Length: 119
Image (cartoon, rainbow, N blue to C red; front, top):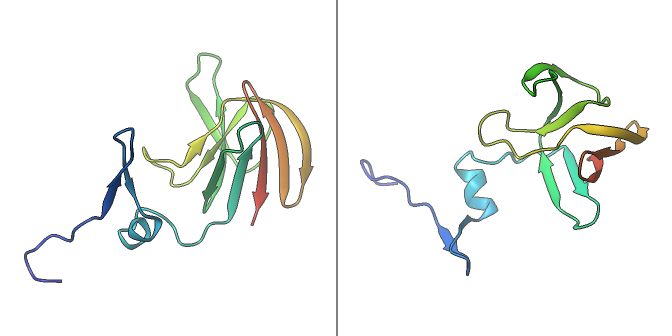
């Protein structure tokens, strides 16, 4: 890279006007983890999200944050890393735990059914 020159970010523009960055560019810029350990799939539309780590968030009755956990439970939401304003995905509150195994969890939220896989 030439000193004093900012690196260029290669973006593509979709037909709807949104800008997209390639996965390789995102990794090079540190915007995306190379090591992805979790995959979330939403039943119905097949939405697929991946992240390095996950946490389960518990909420107060007024909808404010209460605490974070390492295990799923009814009343909690799944949050996928990175854990900042640019998080990968957050589910609505879990209403039912359908199946729990060591590397797989199937759960129902207020508006969707998800499968979470440990990769």
